[in-house]
Length: 381
Image (tube, rainbow, N blue to C red; front, side, top):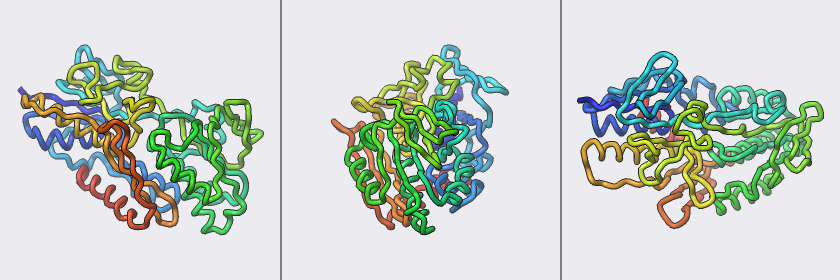
């Protein structure tokens, strides 16, 4: 009897899980991959759109060109996950499963901060990156605020990458002295889970005259007064406001038995949920690391996909190998002027998280470009 494996979400985690499972199990399984979108893009390419280095079409890879042989892709919206009856409902059909991998990511909720939709900009969506491009190109003077509203959010270094690249843009245009740049963060350091990287980020912000306002949680924008309201009733004025939207788990997860305060809880060992043969990987999960959590990042979702694929293969083939998720991966941090740093992580493999920062250096530019090329080549024709 053929085993049905259903994968919800075709981001880093979903694509890698489908690839590994098909490689390992071939025709002994039917694999269906469902996503509401028609295309995939690597998160950091949105900066290329934001700064006009590439168009939106140039950073997209369409699922019609999926190169994972034998995987059935369905573009549809998931409306219900029934773990009791092992059925997933979409707008158009019902899908049964023997194994389920939930990789639905995190949704953006810009409406969660009053005034932000009306008078703020973001670069976390492709549409937001497109919209902000002419705005930053026309901005010549005044107060520019970059705010992280709350945690968790995808790709923790990204807000600082935006600040560094904006600084570089304004320097090249000869207008940097006319612009007062400030970063507002809700916590005491830039990246609480990586104190060494936080120290480097703080140093580089200071070198670029970008003021870091710690414990400044923005709760509302006043578009009339052009003020960002802070949780302690203070306010900061702005001429241009850029925010990292509040993140939330998809509604179908919140409405399902998998939801736990919004995010999905999993075993640290094999990323299985409380339901047998149901796994969750990537941004949709919340995995504790001490008082914090594993960050939401594509490379870590890819690592999680490999662990889940190993575990499913082990169960189907009745193997005895034990696999555990260590949350290992590498990501890249843009500093402007062509310089890139590489952050290497292992969050769960030791007694405490291991995070190292290499660079910044122009040498890591090729590394970053190859990271994108290798994955597109692996997953698409």
